Length: 145
Ligand code: FES
Image 1 (cartoon, rainbow, N blue to C red):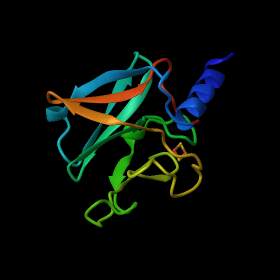
Image 2: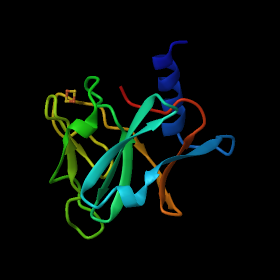
Image 3: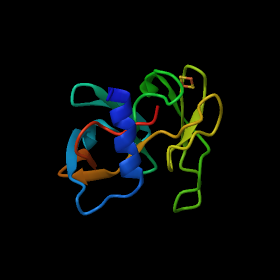
Image 4: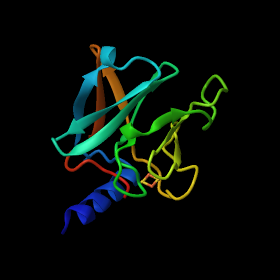
């Protein structure tokens, strides 16, 4: 089974819901102090996978760092407006890929414009002792591609 196939099967299992047998791991990405509100930063997981960490409106979110359309790093893109309403009723914002300008909703990673069709995989974020961590199933990081 190739790397891509492995990822897809794991993604499917994760999306299908976590069971009591699912083993999770927490991954320390960066210091919250290094990510002021209104900024984003790429972090590496296992020395391979890239995760884009975004701090906007007082909320920190983490998504796969590579666009779902083609291989392009999202930290070369821009934080932009729009997106789904947040708890205060205001749009949470979007991230725009710099290569073909697809926007992704920061609420859930949904692709809002072509050519991208698949959403960015979003990872649950935990803030602990001033650090930003994600909690994901053990094994390869799930991504959409
Ligand atoms: S690579 Fe991101 S929109 Fe094409």
